[in-house]
Structures are given as structure tokens and as C-alpha cells.
Image (cartoon, rainbow, N blue to C red; front, side, top):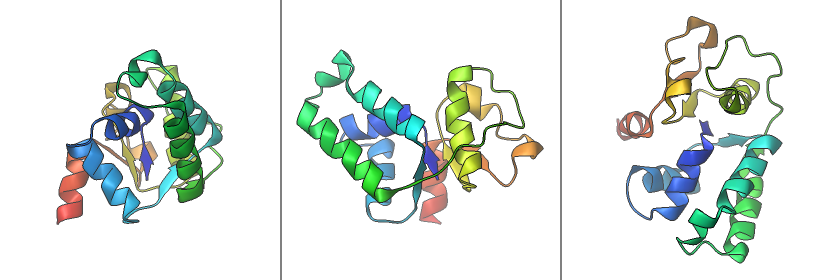
Length: 139
């Protein structure tokens, strides 16, 4: 599974709710998180933003988070030539990770990625919101 960076960060800074629940499921090793070097870099960059520091995320905690993600995730090579066009080019790295890792799910709240959810070219990849994924986990 690939989790969009903004959801991952929200799950870190908000101790309750669906995003924290998603991270908790991952920590219990209920699914394999797939990541690329670019997504690790993006996670590190986002966690260093001043607005994130307001949530008590220290440099030490950022280092711990990044090292933990590297250790507990499967690093893959992103797909270089995407079979579809993504409305926002910044989101291409997320889709490239999902396709390169041949995952079943890409979890996102980003409408630029969600608009691709029914694209037959991307099957068997399912692009869904976190709440929909959590419902599937509970079945």
C-alpha cells in the first residue's frame, strides 16, 4: 500500500481519528507500506515545515520517524513512464510509487489522484480515501 504524504503527516500530528487509525494498523503490521526515496524526501521536507513544529514535532522526533519509516517500509523503484496523466504533476511521484511497487491500494485525500480511481489503465490498483480503506479493513 502507498499512503499519500499529507495523510501520513496528518496521522503523525493528530493522535486520534482515521489517519492515526491507519498508521496504527500499519504499525501492527497489518499491511506493508511501500515507499520510494522521493516520498521519503518529501516526508522529511514536510515534517520540517514551521507549521508542523507547532505540533511538538522536534528534530529528534523527525529523525526517529524517518528512520522508522525507512526500516519498516518496503522501498521500491517508481514506475518511470506513467500510463495516465495526473492533473497535478507533484502527485506523479505518489502514483509512480504505487505502480512501481505493484500495490493494491493508494490511500489519498487528494482529488487530483482520486479522479483516477476508476481509470481501467491503473487496475488492479485501487485509489481510495482513508475512511473507505478502514471500512474494508473492518470487514
